[in-house]
Amino acid sequence: MDKSKSKSKSKSVIEEPQGSTLQERKQHAEKEQQAVEKEVEELLTWTDMVEGMDESQLKNYVKNRPKHLKTAKREKIGKSRRVNE
Image 1: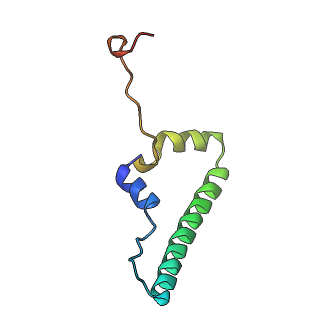
Image 2: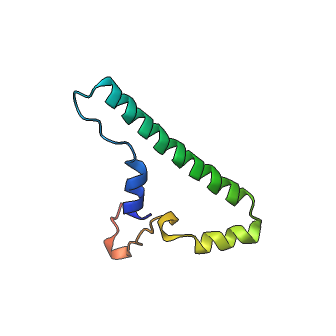
Image 3: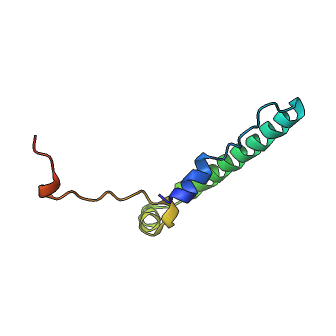
């Protein structure tokens, strides 16, 4: 997973400064709510797209999906680097 993309998704919450007025906190909450609603809408759109695919389309999508949606590949550890139990 692309770290820059995942950080922007997981860090969509905006830091609220100390000593904010009620109006500023309300605006902050509204911005945060809009960001969450947008993310939910994107997820719903994606799930609708995936649910509408047949088996061959799904296989093709998994093989050719965007790089930021791919899971991180783990490096295989050689026998010499393994810890003997």
